[in-house]
Image 1 (cartoon, rainbow, N blue to C red):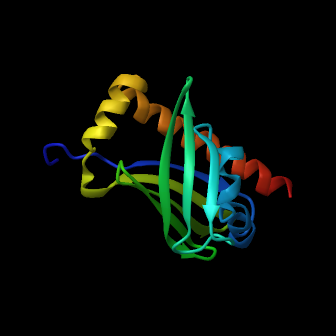
Image 2: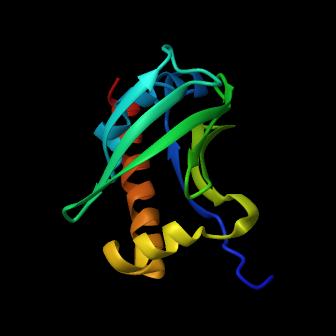
Image 3: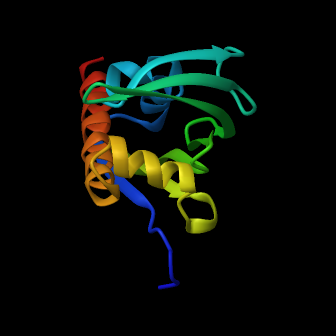
Amino acid sequence: MARGYVAPLEAAVDIAAPPAAVWAVVSDQRRMNEWSPETWKQKFFGYPVREGTVSVNLNKRKGFVWPTLSKVTAFVPERHLAFRVVGPGAVWSYTLEPTETGTRLVERRELLKNRRTFASLVTASTALGGIESHDAELVAGMEQTLARIKAEVEQA
C-alpha cells in the first residue's frame, strides 16, 4: 500500500424492498440528519436533489460542531448517489444493487487522492479523538445510518 494511502470506509445492508423503494428514501438527502448520527443540519440549494445540487452542512460529534460544503457529483436513479465534501476532499456515496430478496445498499467514503488534508488531520487529532478513532466512529455511523434507512424502507 502506498505511503499515506487511506483505504475507503464502507458499510452495507440488505433491504427487503426493491431498488425503487430504497432510492425514494436515499435520494431525499434533506433527511440525512434523521439517519446519520454525525449530520446535524443541512441547507440545500436546488431541489429536488440532483447532480450539481450544493448543500451547506453542520456536523456534530460530542459537542464539537463543524461546517462542510457538499456538491452532488452523481445521481443515477435507483443505482447511485454521490457527493463531494469540499475541504477534506471526501466523496460519500450510496450504491444500490438489486438482489434476489430486494436491494443491497452500500455507503462508502473515499478520500480524493487517497490522502487526508492538513486541516482534516488537525481537526481529527484535536477535536475528534484521533484519526483511527474517528474512522471507527464513521463506520459505526454508516452502519447506524443504513440500519435506520432499512427500518424506514421496510416499514413502508
